[in-house]
Amino acid sequence: MISKELLAHIRKIEIRTRRMVEEVTAGAYHSVFKGSGIEFEEVREYTPEDDVRNIDWNVTAKMGNPYIKKYIEERELNVMLLVDASASGYFGSGKKTKLETAVEIASVLSFSAIRNHDKVGLMMFTDKTELYLPPNSGRLHCLRLIRELLARKPDGVKTDIASALENAMRVLHKKSIIFLISDMISDENYQKLLTVANKRHDVVAVRVLDPKEVNLPVLPGITISDIESGEKDYFCGGRKAGENYNSAVAELHSQNKTICDKAKVDLIDIKCGDDLTKPLMKFFRKRERLAQRG
Image (cartoon, rainbow, N blue to C red; front, top):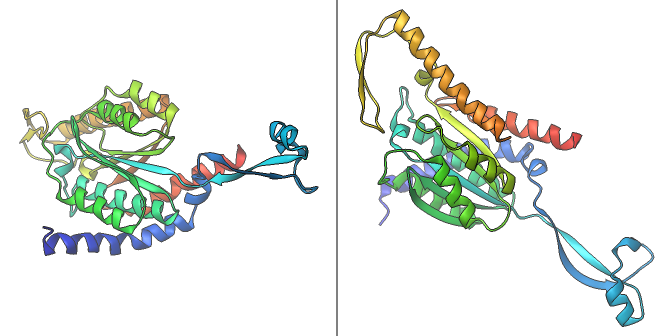
């Protein structure tokens, strides 16, 4: 039974992301993701307006008259959302946690997909697959997807991106757009699977970070706890310690960017509290320009 509070929350997200969806779908989404090719529709008699290269010579020989193969564009796409539901997602120094931000991103991408007549699926993961919803279409399916993102309580706390990508490749039987939504902090051993997945599909990484994970302000001495590993460490505080921390964090983020670059995967950076549409539209416009050149 869905509570009234959860229903209200789902509806609030749908309303809040509506403007973002309109901006994304009115922009470059359709031109960037055009479908996986063409599919055969029928054989019919040749007319003078047809291209002779489409003549089916086997059918023509049998029938005694020229026939051609007719094709249609295969417009429908599969969009798969891989959402990191590990414990680090519950961190947030502002009004929203990283997981709440990830839910909004997933909502925008989901509604953009169905508005574009595509199917969208969901795989929530930690160090194992927490939930899998096969790609489907329609508003009700999107609302169910959002409901699961909000209500599902993961069993795991750690992160295993490689395993999530491997499981996604196992269940996706046609080329799909995979959006990997994660902070990419607690896992660095996924470059090989990311490369393989991007060769079979079109993988886009969406890195969700809290502003304090990018630039820590000057703080007094505090004990810091890793929510995924449970390890604790004392942070001595002060300007010098803060600079060392920020330098180490910048190196980690740079390593993850390098992993994506080597796998030829686009990386979209989104900070909690920022307008989601700006980095998403920047990505779609970049893809559109590249598509026009190619």
